[in-house]
Image (tube, rainbow, N blue to C red; front, side):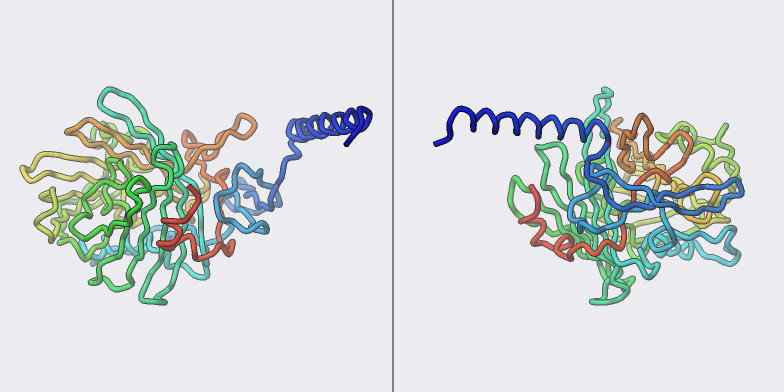
Length: 376
């Protein structure tokens, strides 16, 4: 048994240790990880310098020696856009296949990617509910007949923690993607069929098809061509129109009408606005079986650096069900770092967001086993 003096000594040690931990946190000496920070020069060129990344910026499953990148270091995962591109002679299907290729994780030699995202759901009364998720994505470049595997894992709020959506993206245009949903309350994995492409993605206004569109399921035709004036155009009043004003205004665009091949889908057709010179998708309208506007989507790809448009990143998505008056805002998760926010949506600067790629995380994170056994 310890005597009084020994107990006092141990108590003093515990107090000192607690004080040291607090002091460490106050001094910013908490655990840090390797990172590369972009330096954006006046001429638009980008160089990188070493800058540690706080532990709070890490996502689940990363090895201890993983290196995070404050903005993309190269084209391993960023979408490298030739601008302008020659679209003369393109069919409507060519434009939509270009979207699929650009978003299809085809750029080698990327090995893996993980990041965290946030979704705000706003009902017709203006009440907001927030969801947060991690996404794991691993390209296969044709191995096992796959383009990539991805896992979306919801970890907030607590009542949906553990909900997962797993996707195996097929390389073959005519072959359906394999997609599964896991609901922890039911403890069952449910297959998402092609007929459920118009179902909600994770309880949002966004559909499964919007998240992973496959041109094979649609018939496409041109529905017009115009230079967009956001001051007068109807899309200025759609949810997200103001946020994406400068990304759309003045762009030469084509309208493409998409009619689903599956007649059981709850829409009659969709209209897609596509940048004619850059090839990237800007806006969508879905119409119900009666021909009335059902849903709008602003899902712009944004330049990673304001003065360098070579690389694009997934920016902010705004989706509205105009009939139910509900809205969904999907975006890269915002961190507060000494009063600064990353990314900076007001200035369209995404270089302060930390991307994790080529970290070597285990394939377990894109498996059904993770859906059932992963972190809860």
